[in-house]
Amino acid sequence: MATPKKADSGVKFTHVDKMFFPEAKFTKGDLIRYYIAVSKFILPHLRDRPVTLIRFPDGVNGEKFYEKNAPRFAPDWVQTFAVPRRHEEGDIRYILINDVNTLAWCANLGAIELHPFLHRVPKLDQPTHVAFDLDPGEGSDLSTCARVALLVRGILDPLGLKAFPKVSGSKGLQLYVPLNTPVTYGASGAFAKAVAELLERTHPDLVVSKMSKARRKGRVLIDWSQNSPSKTTVAVYSVRGKSAKPFVSMPVTWDELKRTKNARGVRALFFSPDASLKRLAKVGDLFAPVLKVRQALPKVFAAQASPVEPSLRRYGEKRDFTRTREPAPSKVTAKAKGTGGRFVIQKHAASHLHYDFRLEMDGTLKSWAVPKGVPTQLGVKRSAFAVEDHPLGYLKFEGTIPKGQYGGGTVMVWDIGTYDLLGGSYSEGNLKLMLKGKKLKGEWHMFKIRSDGGKDVWLIAKSQVAANPVSARQDDSSVLTRRSMARIAKDNDAQWQSSAR
Image 1 (cartoon, rainbow, N blue to C red):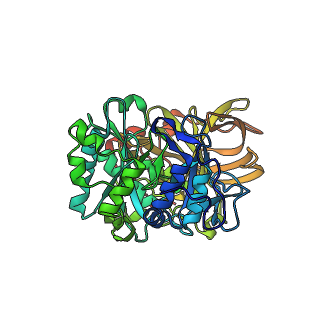
Image 2 (image 1 turned 60 degrees about the vertical axis):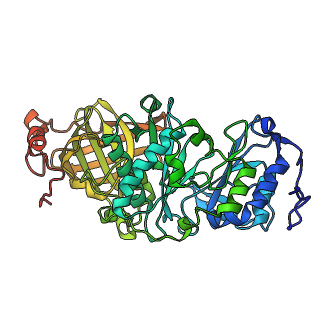
Image 3 (image 1 turned 45 degrees about the vertical axis):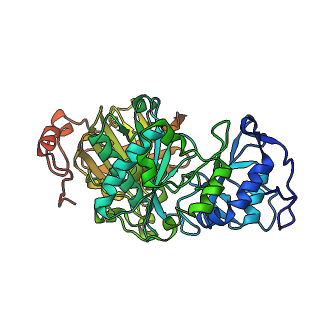
């Protein structure tokens, strides 16, 4: 099939003879030809999904860059959708590849790789499937990933969940569990994380669930974190720019994965663009069920099925709510956003003993870790490290967090009460506070001094006059239950439900 001079829209293709994969003598024109030929198979999987393009203007031996925003020169007929930025003001105008002309136009930009989100617009918080991204560490390969994929399937089958595998076109593979039912990333991410951590516990020599490269040697990372509204995964039928030769992310069968015990079986799962088109002509779209099969996650994850406040996503991603009784994140109501004025200080014996200081603002708890506690004497400044926002349910959270979970250890409600904002604002990095707690009363000043490795570092100091000192007995007593840290640890309750007000 010859590369067309231009698309149906009238857009001309440029530099079609440029060598994109020199070792395979695969040109930019060949890339355009492939995407046009595969369009009837790839477009249903891309439809209405915002896409990140990975562009290689000079091929795989040149520089590459990620493009989220549609370029200013994009033709009017290229559909886009504005997605609010998650950490700053403004929108990202993502491209929607809903037709062959847009697909070919992206290929003409040198977009070798196409990475869509797991959701469709306009439902940005509703994934259509769960993705398990299996990434081999040093000393592992596609054969190792296949073994892990079969272990994942062994968990999914008893739950009545069908999964469909595809090779990544590089070293690993992905498993997609179609949902196509109302669900949130909070639920799908928690489910994927629970599966990954279960396999890590039962097969520690084969599976890891955390990104640390040191721990991944000889093992496979089950990257559950891909189940996030801010992350993309390479599209099925996308070409990859990972090696000197072009390979395609292709659906495979479970029987093919079982045959990867030898090198021949592994080689059979690397598909060139031409081989991919021949396979599609023979077997069709093996990933078509991912678009149609309707499935529900286990009910244990229903607690996270409600929409999650964007500022609480990081909090939710760090925790497995099937193992910890910490309050799950949810959508903050307009009424809650209009309230404020409560604070809590929790004494927290995790890897290191510290105090967590939290202020109710805009429906969540702005939070800091204060290693040495809130000072009571004038002239003493203590470091306060900003951490992720916490849900309001954390105001009275006291008990134990299981070992191995984020922040695992003993938590005491050390002080609780209300506060007045006397001046400044959180966004300015300057807060003048009047605390009215059961232990702490008076004025304090908090101010941000720097950002250290992406974390904001603040200082907190006593203002006006010194506060009454806290005795050793008071320091080891909960204001809710009068329990000591040792007693809370001994009780080992996942969450103390107090009737105190």
